[in-house]
Amino acid sequence: MNEWCETVAADQDLLASRAPVTVAHGLLSRWSAELGYVAAAITYRRRGDRAHQVLANGGYAAPVAEYLAGEFVDDARIFDHIRVASGRPVCWEDVPDFERTPAVEDVLRPSGFREGSSVALGLDRGRVTSVLHVSFARPQVDSTARAGIEALARQCRRIVTDQGDREAFRLSSREHEILALVAQGASNAEIAAELLISRRTVATHLENIFAKTGTRSRVRLAVRATELGIL
Image (cartoon, rainbow, N blue to C red):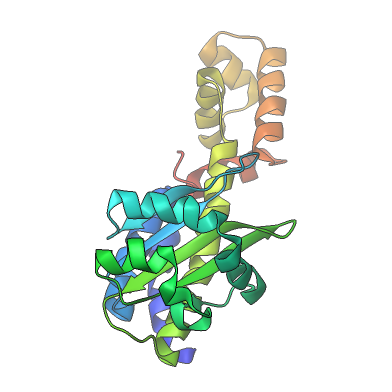
């Protein structure tokens, strides 16, 4: 696994202070050169939703990406292997008779893929909530590539977590105004004067913002909003 340490370290700037979707596309592109895959995607389930959607896609035709977020996720025969692996890459060769399934015969192989791997990025009550998919034109994935996929998956977990947190920042236009002023270091009195509202109204808006975003202080609110590329 040490062979991927430099690549992971080089990604730290990419992971900082950008929208999760932007970060995801950057990581998938960067690692494609390192691992030699020809397509990769991250699918995830929003809080409260049952179905997956595509967070980032690099190289898959749109119908293939939609398949990976839909029918592929719903296939318990396949996904039991991914769930049980608990974050380790599961390749085609790891799943008995996988190459004879409709997933391969009707979707993946006709798209030019000869091997691939999926990694569970998150679990909730036994259900896989997010997945990293990578596909190769070559017929084998060696142990070094598997270690690289696992290293990439660890970074993707952070991205999915950040995306969930970003979606929690569903603020009204007034709340966004207050968030921006908080990030500038303005006090409640200064915010009230700037927006021509009462201090009590500012305090109420801040309570709502803290509740929505799961933060407890003005500093943490501003830092997290910056980390997620909102400010």
